[in-house]
Image 1 (cartoon, rainbow, N blue to C red):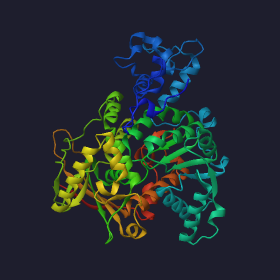
Image 2 (image 1 turned 180 degrees about the vertical axis):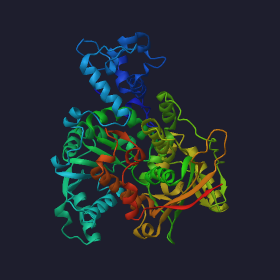
Image 3 (image 1 turned 45 degrees about the vertical axis):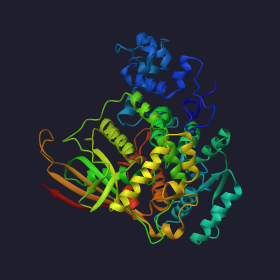
Image 4 (image 1 turned 90 degrees about the horizontal axis):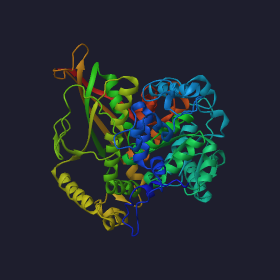
Length: 549
């Protein structure tokens, strides 16, 4: 049976005529392929049974026949080798797989036999440690340059074989020649492998994945082009890192592929660029630097530009247009996940008004509408459920300067929110990004001068409780302020963060989650040296102040 794509499972959001929601011909097919079916199947395999409304809910132990549990020596299927009453039913094979699944949920090392069967990355068996997929794209060319810098980094003690991948050999060669000229390495083109593959050709993606230990996926928007790469990587035992800032894609990939990636022992790590490593690891850094229990954090992003102003490539704009145009499906996905809320420790963090004044930074601010909040919340859930750490509440804002900037952004926001509701409006937004974004987004992207003159600062204001003070019925008595500062966000910080995430994946394997899966950066790298690596390359984490009230 043909597997349906996301564009077929979800309503088309581009407003094109004749777009319809396609449904599989049978209940079983729908359950296997749709977001709701995936969530229900994951819910059942987690040991909580079938949610209300699922046709398998009435079937008791027999529901596991539909939900794909392991077949044991008795011939009966049951997940983890137990039926709904908790009695062992599936024989030794089912009980063994069940133990492995439970160990993975607790963050423990998989059983040795499974690790010998391929649950660890075989770096020595692949011709390339890294492959930059989409290297000829606007962001991909900067990632290519950053990998080339890392290849000759003074800290490196081992060889770093790598390759670029894309549809056109000529374009890939031009990117390598440009990087060679910029870095003063005339022989670079002969040192880097070239792989020809196309996102529309699954066989070519398989061939690329087979040659790599880690794929750096730079092809977006990810809601349209990200899943085939993840699927190819998992099927071929390859880890994958992307720089998506699209919450719907990130969360859907977790539900669809987390268990499959865990079975293969590979790591799928999204949002590993400016979205959302500074925010996600910034919260973890703040927690680690507080002498007590951190309970809540607010972050404020400030973007600084030079005399030529700020410009962002329209690829980011397209992702935002498609994301806001399809936000109803994101809400539906979250409602259907039926996950328990993460407990709130200490007073509940109050949300600010849509336009508020931050006294500490002497600037107006608005809510940050990127992926940071979604990513940080998923990380905090993972750390709480798997590592038993106290969860941190989080809210993200971006500073906008004075009242003139506030008025300008209000008009831009109203235009955007109005047009994004309609198909023709989305087409206009995508066709004329410079007009509707008041000059912030363009099809050409920033010039090198604009990139060189830009920087960002993300300031974190945290509160919590000192050791020995109970969060119950007490007010927070510790406040801490930390910062993450770095160069231009989209095309300098993002490549650095992405490449260092990949190097951490290659070099800090002992500190990663013990089984594979689909992770946020904070969930994957909270116990690694990634923050140290970023500090060494110009993305600086620091404590500004820490006081006990």
